[in-house]
Image 1 (cartoon, helix red, strand yellow):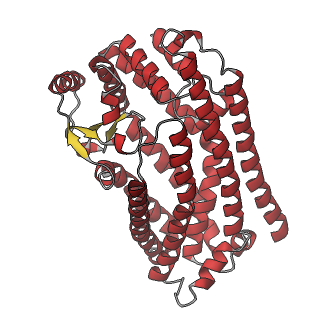
Image 2 (cartoon, rainbow, N blue to C red):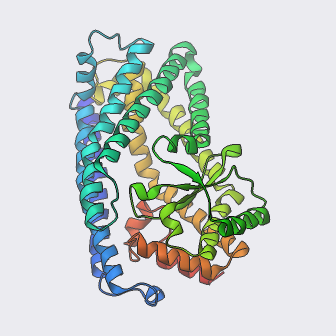
Image 3 (tube, rainbow, N blue to C red):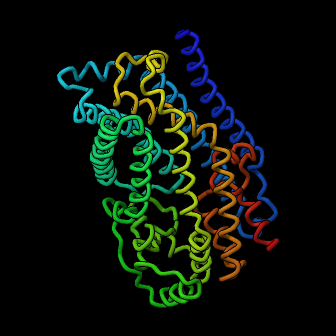
Amino acid sequence: MTINYQYFFIFLILFAAIFELWLNKRQINFVCKNKNKVPEAFAKNIKLKDHQKAADYTVAKTQFGSFGLVISAIITYYLTIGGGINQLNSFFTHIDVTSLIGGSLVVTILAVLLSAIEIPSNFYSTFVIEEKFGFNKTKTKTFISDVLIDLTTTAAVTFVIIYISLWIISALGASWWFWLWVFLSSVIIIMSALGPLLQQLKNKFSPLEDKKLKVIIEKLLKKCGFESQGLFIMNGSLRSSHGNAFFGGFGKTKRIIFFDTLLDKLTHKEIEAVIAHELGHFKMNHVKKFMAIMITILFLSLYVLGGLKDNPLFYEVLGVEIMSDANFLMLFNFVLLNYLFFFIKPAMAFISRKNEYEADAYACLVAKGDDLKRSLTKLYRDNASTLTPDPLYSSFNHSHPPALMRIKAIDNL
C-alpha cells in the first residue's frame, strides 16, 4: 500500500514538473514565432528592435525558469522520499524535535536552507540575465546585503510563526486546525499591513518632491475618496531600471509608492492614469477579496488535510520516519500547499486578470483611457514585457492580461 502511494507521489512530482516545462516550451516557441513583427496595435509606438529584445528577454527568463523547475522537483523528492527531512531531524539529534523550541528550530532551519538554495539562482538572474538586457543596477555589495536581510527576516519570522503554530497544535486539542487557521489568517492580514515597513528594510523611501505631480495625484485621490499615509519615492534604480508603482500597506498603513525609475519614463498624466488603475484595485476591494480567497483556501486546506497529522501512513508515504507536529508543518507548507496551488493556479490567475480589467475600467472613468494606454505601452516597452505570450502559458502563469487583450479591452470601454 505504502509503495503504491509513493509511486503516485513520484508521479505527481513528475507530472507537475513536466507540465510546467511543456508550458515553458510553448511560451518559448510562441514568442519566437511572433518575434519578427510588432502587433498592429503597438506598431506606432514600439520599434521592432524593442519587440525583439522583449522576445529574447522572455525566452532567456523562461529557459532559466525551466532549469529552476527541475531543481525544485529534485528538492521536493529529496526532502520527502529521498530522506531529506529525516536527515535534518537526525542531524539535530541533540535537539528535541518534538518540543516547541526544537521543532521551531528545525522548521526554521529548513526554511532558511530553502531560501539559501535560491541565492545562486537569484545571482545568475541578476548578474547574467538582467545584466545582459541592460536592466541590472545592483552592485555586489547590495546583493549580499539583500541576501543577509532576507535570510535574517526569514529566520526570525518563520521561528515566531512556527513556534506559535506548534503551541496551538499541541495545546488546543482536536480543534487545533481551526485555531491555527485563525492565527495564520491574522498573520496574512498583519503582513499585508506591514508591507511598506518591511520593504524599508532594503529600500529607501523619500517623499515625492515633484510639486506639480503631487498636486495632480492629490486631486485624483480626493476625487476617488482615497486616503493615504503619503506619496513616496522608492529607490528602485539602486537595483534595476525596471519601472513600477504600487500601493503598499493595508487600512491606515496605505502608502502610494513610486519607483524613481518610473518618474523618468512617464509624463504626469500617464502617471496619473497608472495611479488611477491602482486606485481601482482598492475601490473595488481587490486586495481584501484576494486576502479573503487566500484565507478561505487556507481554511479548506487545514480542514481537509489537517487529519493527516496523526496518520502514520501519511508520513510513511512521504518518506518521513518521525511523526511530529514540526514534520507535519514542513510537509504541509513545503509540499502539500505547493501542489494545491499548482492545481488552482489557473483559477487564481483568472481572478487576478479579471481584477486588472476592472481596475483599468475604473482608471478610464477617473482619468483618460489614452493616457493609460500610453503608460502601459511605455511600461511594456521599457520593461521588455513580451506583447505576444502563449495564451495557455499566460492563463497559468500571468496575473495580468496579455498586452493585446488589455489594450483592446480599454478601447472597448
